[in-house]
Image (tube, rainbow, N blue to C red; front, side, top):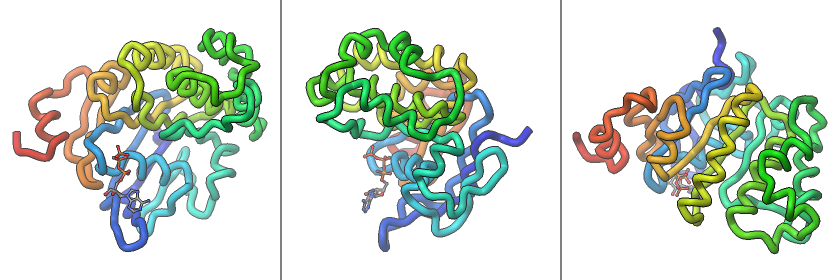
Length: 235
Ligand SMILES: Nc1ncnc2c1ncn2[C@@H]1O[C@H](COP(=O)(O)OP(=O)(O)OP(=O)(O)O)[C@@H](O)[C@H]1O
């Protein structure tokens, strides 16, 4: 079966600086893949390449077997790719509900709408009339995930959900993931917190300096090999 997402041997640069080196990442329909790795490994660059914010100099990104070459970021949402970006990037002066409605702009049909998002994150529901700027970091992260869901994506990209949040809050956010995947949504999550990544993912792929250094099923990953790969030392 054709994978939902194929990132096929991409090279990605920022000016003269190369961030990804022939990187290949494949995500099957319905799967949750966690891409992990230390700072600067290329995780955010990978997500931006899939979302269409960055263009690969070489290689290709395909969704359901169709190349996304030349498809700009705003049109990829309509194709079924939605991202909750690092730093959340909400509109601070808009209310929570207005921020969520921005995510529905593509008009894709599907299970997700305001009621479903509020059911998933009851705290967000209680804050719906408040400006996003007044929320805690964890609440903002929930709104950012909710906004991405409002696009009814085939593929949900989550960038660093845990960044700057207390472990208990991170746990609450990730607790929503099974409900999301039950709807048939495929998830590609980028995460520095290895334990969270292993807890939520079917498969993990570890990047170091723009290359894959280890990949495998989350349930059977060798922790010694993983920590060696993560820090770039030999096991
Ligand atoms: N805007 C930029 N301009 C130049 N180089 C960049 C830029 N953004 C990232 N890089 C470089 O690209 C490489 C990969 O960075 P990237 O942010 O994708 O890593 P990451 O794994 O997501 O790390 P982090 O957890 O710090 O976000 C790094 O060497 C980084 O210095």
